[in-house]
Length: 319
Image (cartoon, rainbow, N blue to C red):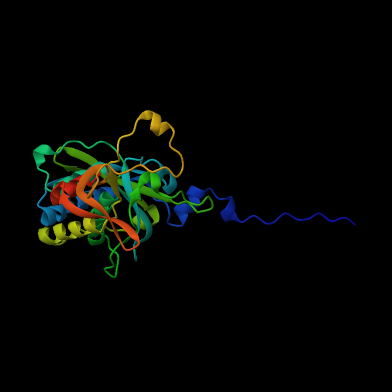
């Protein structure tokens, strides 16, 4: 007697609409509730983030709430565009994974201010990826954003947010195809420094937002470090950044006929006959005048003179 093979039983959960399942399990809220929570965060950042920046930099930063979007986290991340820097973050007892974003223009402008540029010389920067040194600045920008977040959520324990090293948005690794998606909300904040205005945002799973009561610290102006400590921290970050140097040595002039016949093993003499003059540059900017020589088994250059001052060198290396 032939028997029919029974199909695997299908659970009610697997047949359920994903949005309905998320709503029943606390992973999806109604629009009005989420909008209210995001607006509360907007008020928190509008009130307190300018104080954080002013107390540490003496710069006047304007911050305002720009609205929120809701949807799957992967879709919200895909919509942020390339002209920003992003960092994955977590805050113990509040949210195991959320995303911080900030427009590149703000980081570039802040870097220019901290390196001595005056307000009348600041212009809207060209949209481009951040350099390594500017990524170092983004680390501190996200630390300030996270410090306000920590002060405003009802997460027990008083833990600091853990922030992964920022990357240009285009360089953020794509999530694995089998990684579970979740419903999230992105609340956007405008942030302006002088004539330059852009946005930062937090993209947070709704499961965390729905458990959040935004609280407002009792006093302003008491967060962060002093201006001197901030400046020293930025200087240290800049000086620890890795920079690729290039050395250029002038060779003797040759005719086109001679150049066209050069082959492996041929030798082209240096232009200088005694101390060989070397120009050293970084990011296309000349920095030092050096002389060519040898130390043991290694060829090297010895600095003879600075082309630019220390401040000018730092400015050259920003981009």
